[in-house]
Image (cartoon, rainbow, N blue to C red):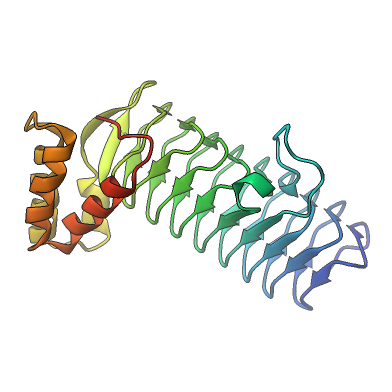
Length: 256
């Protein structure tokens, strides 16, 4: 299951059925779960923990030290969950002490070629990163987000669940749940209605999310007043409640 041309540090912990291709390099303090496939010419450094049934394609760099001038060789961590696909030339960095020490990636994510996930990012589940999407440090991406190719996200931003970014979008503020944004200076362009339908949101739920979007973006209410109006709507819609929670936790302000 492990090609003899691969270089494996004896301190790595690898389940018996893991496949590793030729010329891949697995460093110390790397843990790889059952059913995972590592292609040729992959470099895995640690401390890194990789779950079950992941696929990591050629020339990916996973678990390398963070690109942060404050980093001083502390033993920070990269955690990757289960069933993720990480394509060619992706770079996934470990955390920093200042940012909590961990970069965390959840389950069932599709990470296309040339994606960069920087130190201390927290990535949820079932997210699509199209080619060349890049996250700066300390970014949070909630579940079911779709990021278009060449999307760039500024450090400390958050993308809410089910949001959507068009190609070449530049994000420097938080994106609320369900919202579609586009443009080099990201601007809102409605909700991710097609994505919600594909995830079996009911017509009533989508209608409530549209009402919430109109309150937030078209009512001309100050943000504080818009959140109060959304809170009233959330009493009859759990989906809107998730948007209210996100807005209340936002620290950078939102794309608006």
